[in-house]
Structures are given as C-alpha cells and as structure tokens.
Length: 304
Image (cartoon, rainbow, N blue to C red; front, side, top):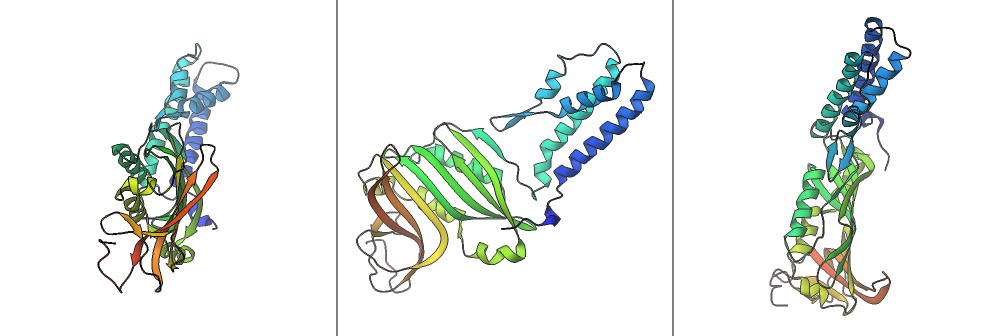
C-alpha cells in the first residue's frame, strides 16, 4: 500500500506552516518596537513554541507549554514575549479542532479506558470509543486478534481496520493491553482506485463485533480447557468446506453449533478459536467458527 502525494499535504501541515510564518513575521516586527535586548527574536520564537506544546493525557491534550510559560515569566519586554506565548496557544487550540475537518491524516494517540470484559458494558464502551475515534464513511476489518480469560476479561486486542475516507482508504491499527491502554495508529493508505477491490472483499467491522458480542460467551469458553482464549479473525470472505469436528458455526440464535453442511462449500468469514497458556503458548486446542455465511440449501439453522 503506497501513500499518495496528493493527500500528504493536510490541513494540519497548513496550520503548522501558518504558525511558523506568523511567529516569524510577528517576531521580526516586535523586534523593531521593543526596548534593546540581546537575541530578542530567538526568545520570542521560544515563547511561541512553548505556547503550542501539549501533552496527551487520557485522550485529552493539556497545554503544558503554555502553563510552563508562567514559570519563565520574562522581566524585559514581557508584553511582547507574552504575545509569542499567546500566538502558540492560539495555534494549539486550532490544532485541537483540525481532526474534525481533516481526515486525510489520522493522528496516533493513546487513552486509558481501564479494564474491559466481554460480559458487561465495558466492551460496548470500548467499541464506542473506537467508532467515535475512527469515524469513517465505512469501516471494514482486515484482521484481528483478541485474548480473553475464561471469565471474559480482555487481556489484549488488535484490530487492523480499513477505513473509507472521501479520497482514500486508511489502514488503522488499534491495540489494547492489560494495562487498560487503547492505542490508535495509521499504518498505511490506499487511493480509492487501487484500494476499492480489496476493500470490497473484507467483512464489515459491525459484523465482526456482532459475532463476538451477540454470541453466548460460554459457547466460546466451554470449547477449550485453557486458561486463556484467543479469537483470531480474518476479514476476507472465503469459501469453506467441511474438514472435521473442529469446524463449527454461529447459528441465528447466537449459539455455536456443529458445522452440519458436510458436502457443499460455504461462503463465510471465520474465527479461529484456540487455547493459550498463561505464558501465551498454544495448548493445541483449535476450532474454526464460521459466521456471516451464505447458505441456500437449508434455511433453518436455529435448531442445529
């Protein structure tokens, strides 16, 4: 996947360019008005940069630089140096609103969301965080891996999503670990022309979430004896045929049942269910679970 030069120049870059130009021009002008002071221009630029510096905490950006400028309160030409800090703080505010208008570049960030369990509302809250942050025209899953305890406590998660924007498809990696930190990072980008075919082959992210959230958790947990349960998702819609007793399917009632269609191929997406030790090593327990399938030979799947 290759990024396109046409989308590299984002609104955020224009904001930074505007900040540099205004800071330099204002610094040059004020250098002519202030009382004599060695290296005033460089000191003015320092206050401008200090005013724009921020620090992310729990999804919020704290203007730490502007606050620190109070510790460096100037004695000479204080009014003019404060102009520099205010210019920086103004552009800090502007940058906070850039993501609302600029979707050509996805900003990496992390946030603390605490413990998550598939068996209570915390998983829904995490999903809502993700949907609001990604905020795409359409979202599909490339691949994913989740690790739970037998009680449904989420230990780790990775989503690799393909998100449709107005002029491109963004590949975004989302991770969660047992410290409760949820992280976002854009890893690649496709233009609409070259990425459309691959995008159409992937499963909707909503379908993946439904397969996990709407299926009885005990159906996953009871299949293996391991202390940790890993669910791996492949986003490609593929053809499956019966292999052996390790092949299962999710029926319309949200229950995991045996794969009953032993001769005819099935178009479906799949979940690989496997057991892990507490050290993360496989126990050898492995099942293939089909969902989002297309079967025309038999309509009633609820009793299987």
